[in-house]
Amino acid sequence: MSKQTVLTGITTTGTPHLGNYVGAIRPAIEASHAAGVNAYYFLADYHALVKNQDPEILRHSSLEVAATWLALGLDTDESVFYRQSDVPEIVELNWIISSVTAKGLMNRAHAYKAAVAENEAASNRDPDKGVTMALFSYPVLMTADILMFNASKVPVGKDQIQHVEMARDIAQRFNHIYGEVFVLPEAVVDAKAAVLSGLDGRKMSKSYNNTIPLFAPSKKLRKLIMKIKTNSLEPGDTKDPDDSTLFDIYKAFASDEETEAYRQKLLEGVGWGDAKQELFEYLDAHLADAREEYNKLIADPAHVENELQKGAVRAREQSSILIAKVRKAVGICRLA
Ligand code: TRP
Picture 1 (cartoon, rainbow, N blue to C red):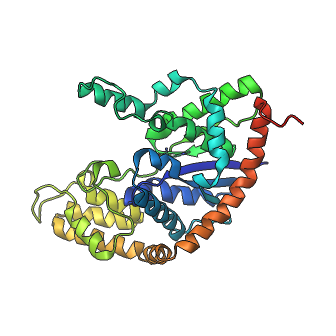
Picture 2 (spheres, rainbow, N blue to C red; picture 1 turned 90 degrees about the horizontal axis):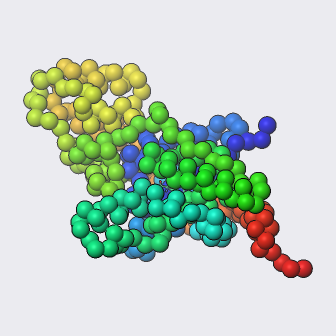
Picture 3 (cartoon, protein in one colour; picture 1 turned 180 degrees about the vertical axis):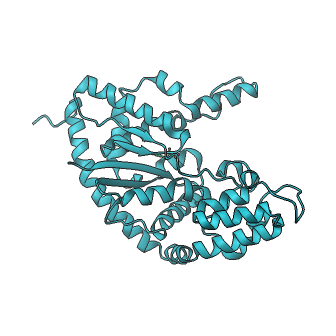
């Protein structure tokens, strides 16, 4: 039986946080160990350009994201770990498939629609104000990422399901016109992956500015945990674990038994300050080894770069074959 290809991209905007870890990184690393799976994980740095035009931040974020995955034990022999921009065939494919992509399909993309809706709500005369071509055609590039490696399963968050469906549509359209070239991908949303709440109780997300960096130094980690929003219940009052960000985060890391013990404490009225201290101590200990490894990697970008280059070589072994097939299918080829 041939192996199934699982692929996902990580946009290199910002520092990975606890929510990224439990929602995406941890399940992806686990999945990479499964038998019968070829895992392709990459830094989506061209996608990051859409939102970030500060070169220094973009560069540093690529280092942080790569170091995070490596520090958490991603095995780069077992999986292919690369940077999108190191695989030029992806942008080439992006152009070719854009010629079979209906503009109307892109008009329906959530991110684009949200930008237009915002302009309309603000009564801007131009509904496309601030919308770049890159934002508009973001799903096409994502499609190229996916189709390039014959991925059949694409683990993503809920917000990205639509993009994977678009990739499937585009692949089908291409196959219909030119013959079977692409594998049709499917989004997989991990129902078990926790969606963490952030400092203010809303979903932990960079866009809400409520994140806790995964590898924040101890002192900073403690400070942030102390900032997590709680209610005004006093020590001695029973706290509802199911309505507590502290419990939510604790549960995402701890074993069932430890979680149960923490739940009991909340029910028995532990003070919020003590509950925070306990969460801090747990996370600090739990993340210590990976954090140490992360700090080493951040201080050694050459090592991280080496890993990415190794991935790029392996990725291009595949992408060069696929792009040759695609070029031939569409009639872009040498004359003799
Ligand atoms: N757009 C995805 C996100 O923001 C990142 C991404 C880029 C991606 N290319 C991809 C995810 C291909 C899966 C497959 O999360």
